[in-house]
Image 1 (cartoon, one colour):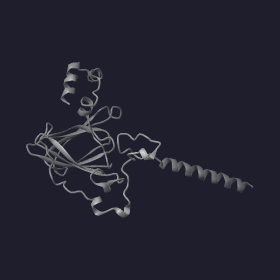
Image 2: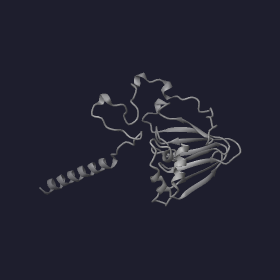
Image 3: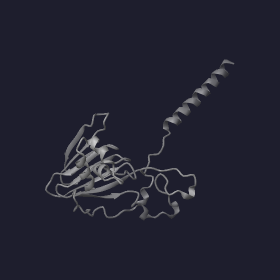
Image 4: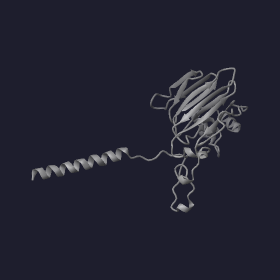
Amino acid sequence: MQIIMKSKYLIVIMALLALACSLASAYDPSPLQDFCVAVKDPASALFVNGKFCKDPKLASANDFFFSGLNIPSDTSNLLGSNSTAVNVDNLAGLNTLGVSLSRVDYAPYGLNPPHTHPRGSEIFIVLEGTLYAGFVTSDGDAGNRLFTKILYPGDVFVFSLGLIHFQLNVGKTKAVALAGFNSQNAGVITIANAVFGSDPKINPDVLTKAFQVDKKLVEYLQKQF
């Protein structure tokens, strides 16, 4: 009788451990767009969390191929930088793989302005030129600490998911870098564009108080975007 009872307890304990392990390993998939509003009628659905999949029997080599990353992007803009993204939108074979990359080109003294990637961490390698790169930590963990480094060809820097970061070409010649992401669509939020160029515009009273500046300055900045 005691042996039977002990066996029952052992079975229950093993079942609870199995359940705990399954709960510990279960998680929601990371979102691959800004939001995904649920619909009750599948016929009216437009997106899944990512892209719909092609029948594997219909796939071809071109689905896993991208050409043109050797071509510099146009940096004749106000910031003096531009990027060429390779993600699931132009390389369909990346769907569900959780990786993507970008080539970033910089004119002399060009800037990739403060921005974040809401869905991916970034590993950044300099191929050409000299860049001043940095990121700012979150409010709580380290109190908005700034980490910066001068990067030369062959140097690698890492930007954690969601942290504000930037790169400035501090050389007199052009610069080129590659950025890899652990997401097929890491997304990008350029801070100045989001704060001062939103549509519709954020109420100037909000930004005036947030930045502790004159309201006219906020309205001026909003007009620039």
